[in-house]
Length: 342
Image 1 (cartoon, rainbow, N blue to C red):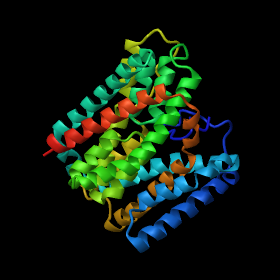
Image 2 (cartoon, rainbow, N blue to C red; image 1 turned 90 degrees about the vertical axis):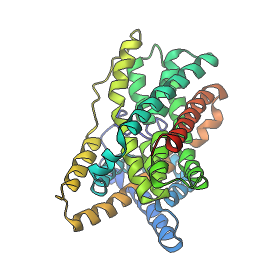
Image 3 (spheres, rainbow, N blue to C red; image 1 turned 180 degrees about the vertical axis):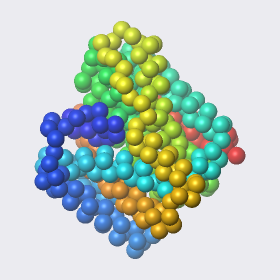
């Protein structure tokens, strides 16, 4: 269950019971202290806030074994992330979104399709069926653990066992955390512009928190572009589920009625208000600060919860499938950023 809850953006995995604020507070206090420490380091040494939040969260990963902290960590990694995404809309205008152009949007779709295809081919190469390839490739291509949960429900238990799903969730969490650290380094080495870096990071990193964290650790401009690109990938989950349900109808699962999630709608609505000048300057300034704090807290909580030690107990073949899809998404996003974008 810990692995399944690691990055449950859609809320596909309900808690055993509703949590009271008294249960949420201990974990939330740990997240706040870790985020404040990250903010102190960022302010005094000029280091990116989200990168410091990630590193401090990973340093506190041992706390994930304390079940008393789970409700608060889950609240920070899901609820604060969603509201942070909405508030980021106050920094973005429709001009920036349209400025990506149809070529960039087509590139996002192409990367998604080819990444899922790479997962299927790798799964067959290592002795797994198409369903597992769709699960691993789709989780990498769309939005990490949330996509994995939705795809597993659609494929059904006849195709995807609980053990396979847990392994994908663990692998996704670990590789997404690693990508958040490594991909911005590649962007810096290549001296990429904010547009190209933001596209590459938003189009290749698995989970939303890590994609946004990587973008804003590079620069504010790259973070805004990464947000737009990543949320475009998130919005593609619904049509992908419909295609999977039609193409692989023999499982016992049913496609979940997942549309565009509310926080994606909220992001674009607030961005539209900002484009029309309806967001006062003071409100936009405070919205930006609160969004940065919420996203940093979500990154801290996600890093604490990442079940990294469980990877040692898994065999290499399933992880190689996830790795193949991960490398495919990264290489394609990098090539698109360098040679397709203007």
